Length: 281
Image (tube, rainbow, N blue to C red):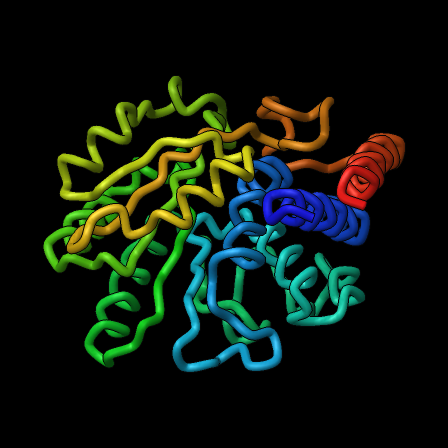
């Protein structure tokens, strides 16, 4: 099995895990979770130094999901990676769960920071990156921001600080799926041209198809893009990628599926898993 093929299969299994959580809870932020899940899968199964048996390993790479409402993607991948039993996914939406609606570092191994208040994750990552450098650690920091998150001004303070302090151990993915809770990003608050703005802030950038795992793996193998500069990846994705009837539809940003809709989505994902398994056999 090729590395890209393995990651595709892992990502498909993670998508099935997302639907498992939705079946448990009856609702959740589907769209953004599925747009970024290929990137999250590539990070955990290809790029990052980490150990599910030792989540606090000193020289591990860190991942912070700045767009914390997309946590279904991280939970799904952490379960797939063996950080906790798959049965924990069935507690999503339940009282006392370890996998709440936004990531909580005090409840679940593998979560590096509490996120969900948009615009804060990147600032946390700049601090972690500086701390790792000061301690002499080889650990790297990766984060995912949503394109609908970019209007938060605190992001731009963090972009400026990261460049000023030359945090080349920091890589930020911008999940550009073009949609947010109330409509298209172009209509709500257009932040384009994103790449040009980040370069003007002192970041080195690349632009990819964030749902093409060969492109995702290639760009991850290339970081840092330039010594002394933080790296930004503008990842164009499709909202709700992997469920054909939901792709690119803002109504699936937060989804309360009817039973027949969930059955249809699960059947499609299972068919994808079967096809990928057969292709890689």
